[in-house]
Length: 297
Ligand SMILES: Nc1nc(=O)c2c([nH]1)NC[C@@H]1CN(c3ccc(C(=O)N[C@@H](CCC(=O)O)C(=O)O)cc3)C=[N+]21
Image 1 (tube, rainbow, N blue to C red):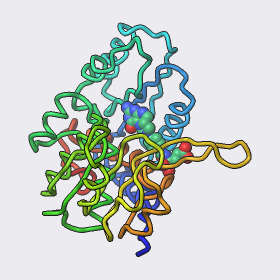
Image 2 (cartoon, protein in one colour; image 1 turned 60 degrees about the vertical axis):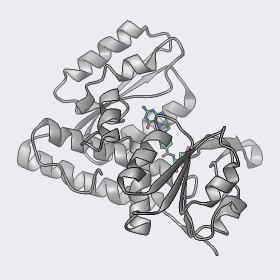
Image 3 (spheres, rainbow, N blue to C red; image 1 turned 135 degrees about the vertical axis):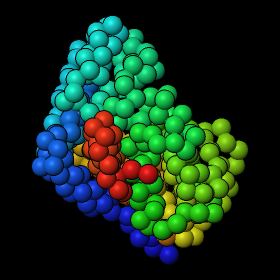
């Protein structure tokens, strides 16, 4: 079998188009402009690229973009003060503090200082608890994007065997909650899982977010399974350049899977599209406006 390639780039473009429509409606009908504030502490080059691309796409859908770049040696008190200012700013509907933070800053403390209603990453303990109990939450962007692609690919996920490889707070754990919410039988696997290949072989749906280059091989994949690769690993490429590869060995896995996301062009663009979608959702909720269908779960 040769897998269908799930075009995350095109899917993300269609979501951004919907978002742009809702932004226009919020302006015309309510005089509102959704605003996203992104806070970057330090000068990690990969983070800078990502923040720039978010800012560009925010402006493309006609939302307001507020970028705050702080030096790596920023104190926790100063960062918390900025978060407080953004919490109180009526033009800011979404706040994203880029992770990882420099080691002297306590990211749990900083994330939990964000107003949960503006927490478009869905990382605040209050949103984690709401998601875990099936209540209306802000849903983390990467798992939300993965769920949207799975639903589009498979229709109902009810009763399917899903294996999530990776147990991070930003992808693995919320992904498992979302799959449970869609009535999958969910297994959470990770680096200590015994016989990982055999566990993955059970899966109708495999979501991999471990940060290990091409760890999941084709012979781990059940024939016809749907494979979502969240990995983003930079490896040496041709001519001294680098290239981006996932946590799944794409070539061998696509020979067995029914459908698979590529890297790049899969999960990454969906993450940014869902960030914009969450900002629109947050803006509607903050203003008591019915939130658009299909932008969140
Ligand atoms: N608070 C917080 N929230 C985040 O959502 C967050 C974060 N911190 N820290 C960093 C990671 C990384 N991340 C990416 C999202 C999209 C692409 C993306 O669009 N990638 C393109 C290609 C990019 C390239 O070619 O370099 C793709 O996969 O096709 C990349 C990286 C969000 N993150």
